[in-house]
Length: 509
Ligand code: UN1
Image (cartoon, rainbow, N blue to C red; front, side, top):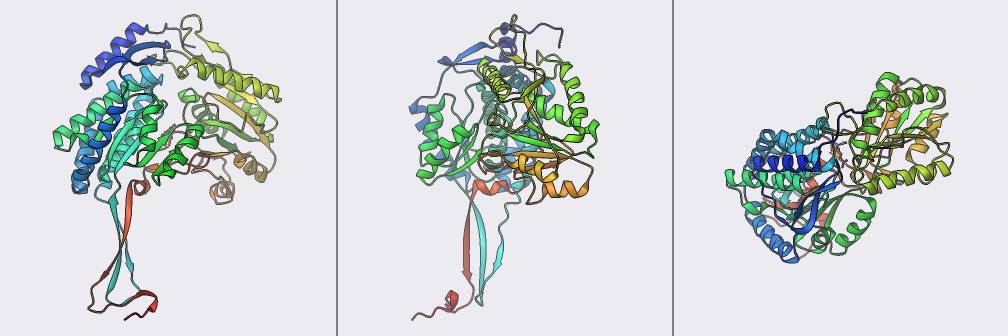
C-alpha cells in the first residue's frame, strides 16, 4: 500500500497541460468526448471528435501524400523517423507523464513505453536501408527473376489504451520507412498522448521537409475507426484491441479485399517445471501478472505449475502479492496503478465470482482500494485464484490482474493445458531442464507467437516480431521482418537475351 494521497484532478489537468505545452501540442477543445484520467477517474478536458468530413479530408490528403512519399528514397524516409526518435528522446519525460495521466501506468513503465518508441525508431531508420528483395534463379537462359518490395498505401492504425503510444510507433515508424502514409485512430481513452505524438511527428516532418500529410490523427469514437475500416483507400488496417473488435474489423476489411494486421487478445500462460529457479520465477511471474495492473495483452493470466512445487510457489507468490504497493502511479513506490475504468473493475470482479462459482479459490487479493478517496477510479488488488480445471472463465481474457493457478503432473499435460485456450499470443516456461525448454519452444510445444524461457510472458523487445496465433489474429508487428506487411511484393522476370523463351517449355508461334 502507498501512504500518500492521490493527486487531485486539478493537479493532473495542470500537469497534462504543461506537458502538452512543452511538446508544442494544442488541445482541440470541444464537446465531442472527454479526455479523462484513471488516477481519479475524472474528466480532464472536453475534446472535439473528427466528423465525417474530417475523415474524408484526411483520407484524401493521406492518399495524395502517399504519391509523393512512395517515390522518396527509403533512406531519406528514414531521416523523418530518425528525427522523430530524437524528438521522442528530448520529450521522454513529458510523454511519460501523459501516459501516466491517461493510462495510469507507473512511471518506470511509462518511461519504458517511450523507450520502446525510441527503439523502434532506431530500428526503422536501419530498416530504411534494408528493404531487401531477392534475386531468384530463372529456369530460362538469359533471364533473371527478382522480387521488389513497393510501398503499400495508406495505413490505418487503430490502437488501444494500454499501450497508447508504443503500438502506434511500431506501426508508424515502420510504415513511414516503408513509404506508406498513416492515419491514426487512437483509443478514446488516450487522446492527449496521441496529440503529443502527432505533434512531434508533425515537427519532425517540418524539420526534414517531408510532406505534412504523411501522418494524420483522427480523434473520436468507433465511427471514425469504422470509416477507415470500410474505405478502399486504406490499404492496410492495423488494429490492436479485443478479439471482439477483430472479429468485426477482419471480415469488413476482407470484404473489400483490403489487408489487416490484427493484434487481439491474449490469455498467456507460464509453465513452471519442478527444476525451475523459484527466485527467478517469482520475480518474473509477479511482474508479468500484476505489472501494468494486468492490462498488457502479454499479461500472464494462467500459471501451470508442477504439482510437487505448487504449494511452495503459491505461498511465495501470495506473500509477494500481499505486499504489492497499489495506488498513485506518480508515487515512486507504487507498483500497481489503477485499472482504466470502473467497468474494468466490474469485469474483474465478475470473472473472479465466476471462477469461484466454478470451484476456484481466491488465495490473495481481489479487493478494491481507495474507493472512498476516488470513487470514480478503479484501484484493484491483483488476485490469485487457484483452480482445478481450465473452466470457461479461465479460457477467456479478462483485462485485469487475475492470475489463475493450475497444476500438472506430466509435461504433456502441461502443454495440453497451455494450448487449450482460444488465444495464442505469449507464453513461457520456467525450467532448468534443457530438453523441456526446447520441447516447449518446438512445433509440438507452445502454439503462441511468442514463447520464452525463464522469463515472463510480457515485456518483449522491439527487435522481434510481435503478435500471435488463433484468436490473437495472426498479425506480426515491430521487428524482424514484420515490415513486409507494410509493403507489396512484385515479382519481376527480366529477359536479357535476344530470344523469347516461354516458361514450362511452352511453344507458341
Ligand atoms: C500490448 O500490450 O498491446 O511485450 C503491447 C510487451 C510490450 C508490448 C505490449 N512490449 O509487453
